[in-house]
Image 1 (cartoon, rainbow, N blue to C red):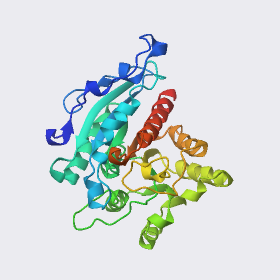
Image 2 (cartoon, rainbow, N blue to C red):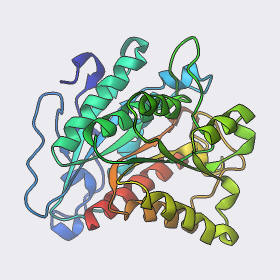
Image 3 (cartoon, one colour):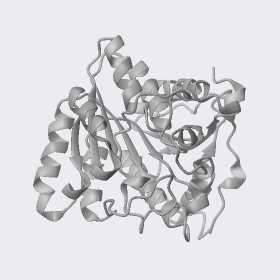
Length: 330
Protein backbone atom coordinates (compact mmCIF):
# COMPACT_ATOMS: atom_id res chain seq x y z
CA UNK A 1 0.00 0.00 0.00
CA UNK A 2 1.08 3.56 -0.72
CA UNK A 3 1.10 5.56 2.55
CA UNK A 4 -1.46 8.35 2.33
CA UNK A 5 1.11 10.78 3.75
CA UNK A 6 3.07 10.55 0.51
CA UNK A 7 0.19 10.47 -1.97
CA UNK A 8 -2.07 13.03 -3.67
CA UNK A 9 -4.95 11.57 -5.74
CA UNK A 10 -5.35 12.73 -9.36
CA UNK A 11 -7.40 15.82 -10.12
CA UNK A 12 -9.65 15.64 -13.18
CA UNK A 13 -9.77 19.44 -13.43
CA UNK A 14 -6.09 19.47 -14.41
CA UNK A 15 -7.12 17.88 -17.70
CA UNK A 16 -8.79 20.68 -19.65
CA UNK A 17 -8.31 22.04 -23.14
CA UNK A 18 -9.65 22.61 -26.60
CA UNK A 19 -12.47 20.38 -27.85
CA UNK A 20 -12.72 19.73 -31.59
CA UNK A 21 -15.36 17.03 -31.34
CA UNK A 22 -16.20 13.76 -29.65
CA UNK A 23 -15.59 11.35 -32.52
CA UNK A 24 -12.47 9.18 -32.28
CA UNK A 25 -10.56 11.18 -34.90
CA UNK A 26 -11.08 14.49 -33.04
CA UNK A 27 -10.24 13.53 -29.48
CA UNK A 28 -7.56 15.10 -27.33
CA UNK A 29 -5.87 13.69 -24.24
CA UNK A 30 -7.97 15.61 -21.72
CA UNK A 31 -11.06 13.89 -23.15
CA UNK A 32 -9.77 10.34 -22.67
CA UNK A 33 -7.46 10.38 -19.64
CA UNK A 34 -8.91 8.38 -16.77
CA UNK A 35 -8.11 9.42 -13.21
CA UNK A 36 -7.47 6.56 -10.81
CA UNK A 37 -6.50 6.78 -7.14
CA UNK A 38 -3.77 4.14 -7.28
CA UNK A 39 -3.55 4.05 -3.48
CA UNK A 40 -7.09 2.72 -3.19
CA UNK A 41 -8.47 1.67 -6.57
CA UNK A 42 -7.55 -1.20 -8.84
CA UNK A 43 -6.36 -0.15 -12.28
CA UNK A 44 -8.76 -1.11 -15.10
CA UNK A 45 -8.08 -4.60 -16.42
CA UNK A 46 -6.37 -4.56 -19.81
CA UNK A 47 -8.14 -6.50 -22.53
CA UNK A 48 -6.45 -8.67 -25.15
CA UNK A 49 -4.16 -6.57 -27.41
CA UNK A 50 -4.83 -3.52 -25.21
CA UNK A 51 -2.01 -1.64 -23.56
CA UNK A 52 -1.99 0.89 -20.76
CA UNK A 53 0.18 3.70 -19.40
CA UNK A 54 -0.06 5.27 -15.97
CA UNK A 55 1.13 8.86 -15.65
CA UNK A 56 2.38 9.29 -12.09
CA UNK A 57 3.83 12.50 -10.75
CA UNK A 58 6.72 12.79 -8.32
CA UNK A 59 6.14 16.18 -6.73
CA UNK A 60 9.49 16.52 -5.00
CA UNK A 61 12.49 18.80 -5.18
CA UNK A 62 13.90 17.89 -1.77
CA UNK A 63 16.75 16.09 -3.52
CA UNK A 64 17.45 19.19 -5.58
CA UNK A 65 17.60 21.30 -2.43
CA UNK A 66 20.08 18.89 -0.86
CA UNK A 67 22.12 18.98 -4.07
CA UNK A 68 22.30 22.79 -3.90
CA UNK A 69 20.16 23.21 -7.03
CA UNK A 70 17.33 25.64 -7.74
CA UNK A 71 14.15 24.42 -6.07
CA UNK A 72 10.77 24.57 -7.79
CA UNK A 73 10.62 21.22 -9.58
CA UNK A 74 7.97 19.97 -7.15
CA UNK A 75 5.48 21.92 -9.30
CA UNK A 76 6.66 20.16 -12.45
CA UNK A 77 4.01 17.39 -12.56
CA UNK A 78 1.10 19.86 -12.45
CA UNK A 79 2.51 22.07 -15.21
CA UNK A 80 3.47 19.08 -17.34
CA UNK A 81 -0.04 17.66 -17.18
CA UNK A 82 -1.45 20.96 -18.38
CA UNK A 83 1.08 21.03 -21.22
CA UNK A 84 -0.02 17.55 -22.32
CA UNK A 85 -3.77 18.06 -21.98
CA UNK A 86 -4.51 19.21 -25.54
CA UNK A 87 -2.38 16.67 -27.37
CA UNK A 88 -4.33 14.78 -30.05
CA UNK A 89 -5.16 11.13 -29.38
CA UNK A 90 -3.21 8.72 -31.57
CA UNK A 91 -3.80 5.59 -29.51
CA UNK A 92 -7.40 4.51 -29.98
CA UNK A 93 -8.33 1.52 -27.86
CA UNK A 94 -5.51 1.86 -25.33
CA UNK A 95 -5.72 3.28 -21.80
CA UNK A 96 -4.01 6.42 -20.50
CA UNK A 97 -4.39 6.77 -16.74
CA UNK A 98 -3.51 9.65 -14.43
CA UNK A 99 -2.45 8.02 -11.16
CA UNK A 100 -1.89 11.20 -9.15
CA UNK A 101 1.31 12.27 -7.39
CA UNK A 102 3.78 10.91 -4.90
CA UNK A 103 4.89 13.82 -2.72
CA UNK A 104 7.80 14.31 -0.33
CA UNK A 105 6.06 14.94 2.97
CA UNK A 106 8.08 16.51 5.77
CA UNK A 107 11.26 16.44 3.63
CA UNK A 108 11.30 12.64 4.07
CA UNK A 109 12.93 11.79 0.77
CA UNK A 110 13.60 8.17 1.69
CA UNK A 111 9.94 7.66 2.56
CA UNK A 112 8.83 9.34 -0.67
CA UNK A 113 11.16 7.14 -2.74
CA UNK A 114 9.87 4.01 -1.00
CA UNK A 115 6.30 5.09 -1.72
CA UNK A 116 7.26 5.69 -5.35
CA UNK A 117 8.82 2.23 -5.64
CA UNK A 118 5.65 0.69 -4.20
CA UNK A 119 3.48 2.56 -6.71
CA UNK A 120 5.72 1.54 -9.61
CA UNK A 121 5.54 -2.12 -8.61
CA UNK A 122 1.74 -2.03 -8.48
CA UNK A 123 1.56 -0.34 -11.89
CA UNK A 124 3.84 -2.93 -13.48
CA UNK A 125 1.99 -5.79 -11.76
CA UNK A 126 -1.23 -4.57 -13.38
CA UNK A 127 0.41 -4.74 -16.82
CA UNK A 128 0.83 -1.00 -17.33
CA UNK A 129 3.91 1.04 -18.22
CA UNK A 130 4.82 3.59 -15.53
CA UNK A 131 5.46 6.98 -17.15
CA UNK A 132 6.60 9.25 -14.35
CA UNK A 133 6.77 13.02 -14.41
CA UNK A 134 8.94 15.00 -12.00
CA UNK A 135 10.03 16.53 -9.94
CA UNK A 136 13.75 16.37 -9.24
CA UNK A 137 16.02 13.61 -10.46
CA UNK A 138 15.70 11.94 -7.08
CA UNK A 139 12.84 10.29 -8.97
CA UNK A 140 15.41 7.81 -10.32
CA UNK A 141 16.07 5.85 -7.16
CA UNK A 142 12.42 5.23 -6.30
CA UNK A 143 11.38 4.49 -9.88
CA UNK A 144 14.25 2.17 -10.73
CA UNK A 145 13.98 0.39 -7.37
CA UNK A 146 10.40 -0.51 -8.22
CA UNK A 147 11.56 -1.85 -11.58
CA UNK A 148 14.35 -3.96 -10.04
CA UNK A 149 11.85 -5.44 -7.58
CA UNK A 150 9.37 -6.18 -10.37
CA UNK A 151 11.86 -7.95 -12.66
CA UNK A 152 14.13 -9.80 -10.29
CA UNK A 153 15.33 -12.37 -12.83
CA UNK A 154 16.02 -9.95 -15.70
CA UNK A 155 19.03 -7.82 -16.51
CA UNK A 156 17.97 -4.21 -16.00
CA UNK A 157 19.53 -1.49 -18.13
CA UNK A 158 19.50 2.12 -16.91
CA UNK A 159 19.56 4.73 -19.69
CA UNK A 160 19.97 8.34 -18.63
CA UNK A 161 19.92 11.38 -20.94
CA UNK A 162 21.69 13.82 -18.64
CA UNK A 163 24.52 16.31 -18.38
CA UNK A 164 25.43 14.71 -15.03
CA UNK A 165 26.31 11.18 -13.94
CA UNK A 166 24.28 11.42 -10.69
CA UNK A 167 26.86 9.12 -9.09
CA UNK A 168 27.54 11.26 -6.04
CA UNK A 169 28.00 9.58 -2.68
CA UNK A 170 25.23 10.77 -0.30
CA UNK A 171 26.34 13.57 2.01
CA UNK A 172 25.35 14.46 5.59
CA UNK A 173 21.72 15.10 4.61
CA UNK A 174 21.47 11.77 2.85
CA UNK A 175 20.38 11.00 -0.70
CA UNK A 176 19.81 13.80 -3.21
CA UNK A 177 18.99 14.37 -6.85
CA UNK A 178 22.63 13.63 -7.66
CA UNK A 179 22.99 10.28 -5.88
CA UNK A 180 20.37 8.05 -7.55
CA UNK A 181 22.63 5.95 -9.75
CA UNK A 182 25.23 5.53 -7.00
CA UNK A 183 22.44 4.21 -4.74
CA UNK A 184 21.32 1.78 -7.43
CA UNK A 185 24.89 0.61 -7.96
CA UNK A 186 25.20 -0.04 -4.23
CA UNK A 187 21.94 -1.98 -4.21
CA UNK A 188 23.17 -4.09 -7.11
CA UNK A 189 26.44 -4.76 -5.31
CA UNK A 190 24.65 -5.84 -2.14
CA UNK A 191 22.25 -8.13 -4.02
CA UNK A 192 24.84 -9.49 -6.46
CA UNK A 193 23.04 -8.05 -9.48
CA UNK A 194 24.79 -6.63 -12.53
CA UNK A 195 24.83 -2.85 -12.82
CA UNK A 196 24.15 -1.73 -16.41
CA UNK A 197 24.18 2.05 -16.85
CA UNK A 198 24.34 4.11 -20.05
CA UNK A 199 24.70 7.90 -19.61
CA UNK A 200 24.08 10.02 -22.70
CA UNK A 201 24.91 13.72 -23.02
CA UNK A 202 27.48 13.94 -20.22
CA UNK A 203 29.25 17.29 -19.94
CA UNK A 204 32.84 17.41 -18.73
CA UNK A 205 32.33 20.81 -17.10
CA UNK A 206 29.44 19.43 -15.03
CA UNK A 207 31.20 16.43 -13.46
CA UNK A 208 34.32 16.21 -11.29
CA UNK A 209 37.17 13.86 -12.10
CA UNK A 210 36.05 11.74 -9.16
CA UNK A 211 32.67 11.24 -10.81
CA UNK A 212 34.35 10.14 -14.04
CA UNK A 213 36.53 7.78 -12.00
CA UNK A 214 33.46 6.41 -10.22
CA UNK A 215 31.73 5.87 -13.55
CA UNK A 216 34.74 4.00 -14.90
CA UNK A 217 35.07 1.84 -11.77
CA UNK A 218 31.41 0.83 -12.09
CA UNK A 219 31.70 0.02 -15.79
CA UNK A 220 29.34 2.81 -16.82
CA UNK A 221 29.04 3.36 -20.56
CA UNK A 222 28.95 7.10 -21.14
CA UNK A 223 28.92 9.33 -24.20
CA UNK A 224 29.49 13.11 -24.03
CA UNK A 225 27.10 15.74 -25.26
CA UNK A 226 29.33 16.42 -28.26
CA UNK A 227 28.38 12.99 -29.64
CA UNK A 228 24.95 14.38 -30.47
CA UNK A 229 26.23 15.65 -33.82
CA UNK A 230 25.61 14.32 -37.30
CA UNK A 231 29.30 13.39 -37.63
CA UNK A 232 29.02 11.14 -34.58
CA UNK A 233 25.62 9.67 -35.43
CA UNK A 234 26.79 6.16 -36.37
CA UNK A 235 28.97 5.79 -33.28
CA UNK A 236 26.19 7.14 -31.06
CA UNK A 237 23.59 4.71 -32.37
CA UNK A 238 26.03 1.80 -32.38
CA UNK A 239 26.76 2.28 -28.70
CA UNK A 240 23.07 2.54 -27.84
CA UNK A 241 22.37 -0.71 -29.69
CA UNK A 242 25.32 -2.40 -27.99
CA UNK A 243 23.97 -1.44 -24.60
CA UNK A 244 20.39 -2.50 -25.40
CA UNK A 245 21.56 -5.88 -26.67
CA UNK A 246 23.03 -6.65 -23.26
CA UNK A 247 19.91 -6.12 -21.15
CA UNK A 248 16.38 -7.51 -20.87
CA UNK A 249 14.48 -4.50 -19.52
CA UNK A 250 15.17 -0.76 -19.74
CA UNK A 251 14.56 2.09 -17.35
CA UNK A 252 14.69 5.30 -19.41
CA UNK A 253 15.08 8.66 -17.73
CA UNK A 254 15.58 12.12 -19.21
CA UNK A 255 16.93 14.94 -17.08
CA UNK A 256 15.87 18.09 -18.87
CA UNK A 257 19.18 19.77 -18.06
CA UNK A 258 20.74 17.60 -20.76
CA UNK A 259 19.37 20.16 -23.23
CA UNK A 260 20.91 23.54 -23.97
CA UNK A 261 19.53 26.36 -21.85
CA UNK A 262 17.96 28.01 -24.89
CA UNK A 263 15.62 25.02 -25.19
CA UNK A 264 15.30 24.20 -21.49
CA UNK A 265 15.64 27.28 -19.27
CA UNK A 266 13.23 25.89 -16.67
CA UNK A 267 15.47 23.34 -14.96
CA UNK A 268 17.32 23.08 -11.66
CA UNK A 269 20.75 23.55 -13.30
CA UNK A 270 20.97 24.98 -16.81
CA UNK A 271 23.59 23.92 -19.36
CA UNK A 272 24.61 26.46 -22.00
CA UNK A 273 26.30 23.72 -24.05
CA UNK A 274 23.69 21.02 -23.67
CA UNK A 275 22.38 18.96 -26.57
CA UNK A 276 19.62 20.07 -28.90
CA UNK A 277 16.20 18.38 -28.95
CA UNK A 278 16.56 17.84 -32.69
CA UNK A 279 16.11 14.96 -35.13
CA UNK A 280 19.25 13.18 -33.90
CA UNK A 281 18.10 13.22 -30.29
CA UNK A 282 14.69 11.92 -31.35
CA UNK A 283 16.29 9.16 -33.39
CA UNK A 284 18.29 8.03 -30.37
CA UNK A 285 15.31 8.33 -28.04
CA UNK A 286 13.08 6.37 -30.40
CA UNK A 287 15.65 3.59 -30.72
CA UNK A 288 15.14 3.00 -27.01
CA UNK A 289 11.37 3.47 -27.09
CA UNK A 290 10.94 0.94 -29.88
CA UNK A 291 13.39 -1.58 -28.41
CA UNK A 292 10.50 -3.56 -26.94
CA UNK A 293 12.30 -3.55 -23.58
CA UNK A 294 10.76 -0.58 -21.77
CA UNK A 295 10.00 -1.21 -18.12
CA UNK A 296 9.55 2.42 -17.07
CA UNK A 297 10.11 5.97 -18.35
CA UNK A 298 10.41 9.27 -16.54
CA UNK A 299 11.23 12.93 -17.13
CA UNK A 300 12.96 14.91 -14.41
CA UNK A 301 13.94 18.42 -13.34
CA UNK A 302 11.13 20.47 -14.91
CA UNK A 303 11.24 23.64 -12.82
CA UNK A 304 8.36 25.96 -13.79
CA UNK A 305 9.70 28.73 -11.55
CA UNK A 306 12.48 29.42 -14.03
CA UNK A 307 10.74 28.50 -17.27
CA UNK A 308 10.24 31.02 -20.06
CA UNK A 309 7.07 30.97 -22.17
CA UNK A 310 6.54 27.34 -20.99
CA UNK A 311 9.46 26.44 -23.24
CA UNK A 312 10.80 23.66 -21.02
CA UNK A 313 7.33 22.36 -20.18
CA UNK A 314 6.50 22.08 -23.88
CA UNK A 315 9.75 20.22 -24.52
CA UNK A 316 9.03 17.83 -21.66
CA UNK A 317 5.47 17.36 -22.91
CA UNK A 318 6.72 16.51 -26.40
CA UNK A 319 8.89 13.76 -24.88
CA UNK A 320 5.86 12.42 -23.02
CA UNK A 321 3.92 12.44 -26.30
CA UNK A 322 6.70 10.56 -28.11
CA UNK A 323 6.74 7.95 -25.36
CA UNK A 324 2.99 7.40 -25.33
CA UNK A 325 2.67 7.13 -29.11
CA UNK A 326 5.66 4.80 -29.44
CA UNK A 327 4.53 2.48 -26.66
CA UNK A 328 0.99 2.16 -27.97
CA UNK A 329 2.17 1.51 -31.52
CA UNK A 330 4.09 -1.62 -30.51
